[in-house]
Amino acid sequence: MSWIFGSASARDTQISRFEREFPQAVRTQQQHSCHFDIEILTRHGNNRLRIFLPAKFPEEAPILQLLSPFRHPWVNAYHQVTGHAYLSRWNEQYDLTTLVKETLAELSRGTPAPQPAIPPIPPPRPTPPPTVTPAVRAPQPPPYEHQVPPPYEEVAPPPPEPAAERRLSTPEQRRPSASPPRQEVSFPLPEVPSSFAQLQGLDRERLQKLDQDVVAFSALLHDLDSVKTLRSMREETIQENARIARETLDKREELEALQSEVLVSRLELQELETEFQTKLQSQLAQDSEKLSQAGIYEALRTSAAEADEKSEDLLTQFQDEDLGMAEFLKSYLELRKLYHRRTAAIEYGHRWIT
Image (cartoon, rainbow, N blue to C red):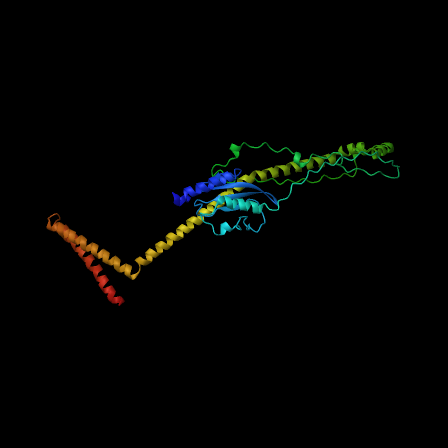
């Protein structure tokens, strides 16, 4: 089976050495091939290098591909590593471990240094409200200054699925599932009323107190129906964005598995195409030889000799009284006619050509 999996001993030796050198590499076994994933840190951030080992490795070169976009002189438009000298003239004497080690060193050059932790900014000290006369209105705080909603990171993600449930075992299970159509979410802004019922009927003294008391003014503001509606819509938008982001991230592992399948299938297709072209050229050469002048004469001579030999066998059977007269004459005459027709075709064919 070495013609399918390459040299088994050389393949196993290279893979064993690679796994000893890179114990962090995650291996995924396919039907006739396998690949390894290694997390790397580049100057653009985290990335993942996938090393494909085709069925005939190490006779055939491995394929190194980055799973995220990355610009580098060694990387082509399809995120495949092509700049290493081994890859342009690969043979089974080259070492996979050396190739990956030098590639990781090259791609990791100029990685950003870890940034020092930024101390939290202390909250500003409270200042007493300014003294305001009735003719001058004090500056009012923004509507959401004192009731800031929780940041996006605090939105609780769904519990992670068990590893056994997330593992993709067969190509059929790795096919993308039909996702339900995403509902378009739109939140029209509430209409701003021309008057507010909460302020109707308040005397001048009460209004001046609200103007000077920031806490009371903020409480009154957030008690307005239009503000409540706007805040509710904002929370719904945050939750919807978080849900869409989780769905997108959940598809990443499935997409990477499908990309791996496509690349392996492409390699197998190239091998089959090469094998087909080889067999096709061989078959065409054989057919061309058979249909040539020499091939036709050789076929006629062979068939004439077969007819002559069969007729002699029938004559022997008739002489030994193993065959009746009627059956002998019928078969014998047909074979002799066939013999003479083919012999004549050979003789007159030469005359016509010359």
